Length: 457
Image (cartoon, rainbow, N blue to C red; front, side):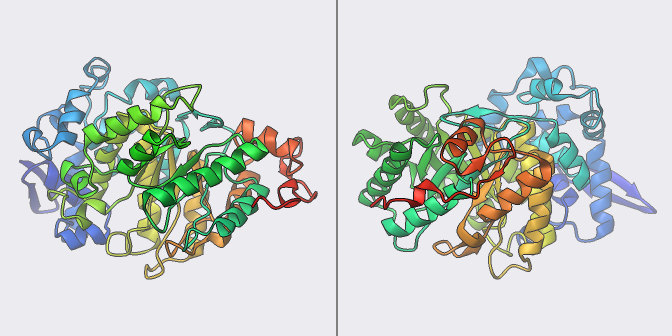
């Protein structure tokens, strides 16, 4: 039982699950689930009570029982008890204050990444202003390496997303070459197939592999199919760089995706068997998003942000190359407007970085949300300040296959220019050699791209 007195009224919260939900910033998904604070006063009271909770309590008052959920078991069984000792005396408010100090630098934060549970991270984020989320995340660099190196302090990357409503090869290549000509694609080139079957996946994988090899592009490719399909095409000998899967923060949600930890392990091992990453075992690409647990009726009464942060424990187990929160994609039922989307994006990025993940963000919204591209410009800019690893690069910021609004090739150029950041170093060198990018000035070249000089197909 947790209590807080506000004015002449005492507020009581049954357990940590209820307290976390009532302390969350307002969002439509939690209202839909019936777990949101009923008044602003109750939300303030919940934040006050949450601030006084000892971190140790999160290891005792489990929001989803250990016996019922394999994600809970993963969180508890992998908890770093040794490094936790340094902060075990703290409350949630103490942790917030410590994270904001100059003393708590990148080295100290790195030591905490396995000592903090997702629930502790979700809790401390609920006490923070947006600038707190930005400042702390900006101190954390999570660097991963494949053919390109992503996450370095003065670098900013993109996933080139050349989706096509009929998986047409010429349409996909046109978008890809367009993106490469605008210095997009250093994190990876990733296609969401419109038709998710083995033959389509094989065709698209070989299409990207042929383009990459022809122009010796130092990047990675991915076809975002279900992990069972990826395992099958690996067994067929196809050129799989990154193994993709959408994941969530509860066992029940992952079951709705047709996965569990055992299957993710199988996919990871299958990807490693190809030995395409010569630098590390980082071959996984995960996508997440607030609201997915509620949409699958798999949230156990837990607020959507805490469910989201629990998904990061799943991702971390497999040392991913990239993780991406598709922040506004699920719709206004879960994040109603631009304000809620902006807050969720900053929360997700902060939480994932604090837990040690190479986090990117699909800065996006659906057309029926109360949001527009100005809202996305705001979130994009703030994520740049926070040190986000990558965003999406989509022609005109309009995905014509998935029918949602995201970020364009020009958006990445804007952020690199205003924050004085460059693409991944290997990719920057390639752009310079191809005459696409002036490495000394950090700007696009005026030359016609050699990618346009001859047809690929």
